[in-house]
Amino acid sequence: MKKHLFFLMTLLCLGMMTLFSGCSKDDPKPTCRIITITPNAGTANNISYNTEGKISNITTGNTVTTYAYSGNNAVATTTTSGTFDSKRIITSNSNGLTINMRTENDMAGTSWSNLAFEYSGTELIKQTSTSSSGGTPDITTVTWTGGNPTTITSGANVQTVEYYTDKPSQTGDYWDIAQTLQGYRIIKAKNPIKSLFAGGSISNLDYVFDGDGKIITLNATGASNITYNYQHQCN
Image (cartoon, rainbow, N blue to C red; front, side, top):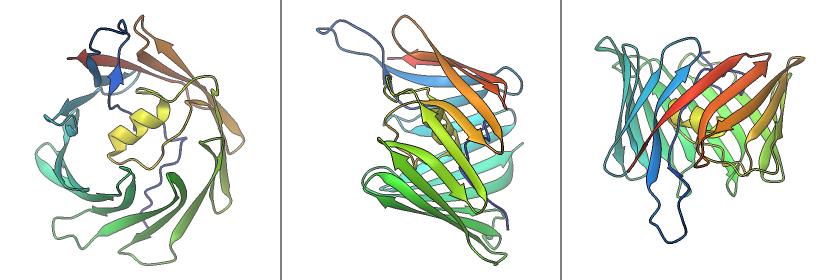
């Protein structure tokens, strides 16, 4: 079965949504969006938005994902060098959290995988993965503490997550950019991630801010040593 899990240790899918830069109380605050995410090794991710502020496409090298929206549904079609790669059909609830995501790997839709998500309020508690190849569904469960997902369990694999409890979650933190580039949102955390522990290894995350309080860099060290730099566009 082809697995599609949101596991944290895959620090390769990262991106953004909306952030307000610092202005005086009486001034209108410009809307700032991350338009480029550049890793220290690898290809930059370029993000475009529609007039509603939703992502219209994400380009990484010769791979382009284009989004089309209708109500609470979105269709994300990915091409590589102009050739069909996959299509994702994403259904969200009234909180903007995805309740189902089906990936079709051929144009006929006969090869597919599916993720179904269950929540307690706005907290993701279970992910069920199935596919056209059949077999036993893969189940992932999530435990929350203080408004943050702190334990993620899939079979014998357990990941624990620590947070900067003195900082609010915001545009450019790990959860935000990971979910933006993966194309669907399943986590609304209270705080940004500080460290990830899985398989006996730990990754530590820290963020660099500009003078307006926007995150401009994410650094991961330890099990993963990756840096992501952001370019913002403000209107």
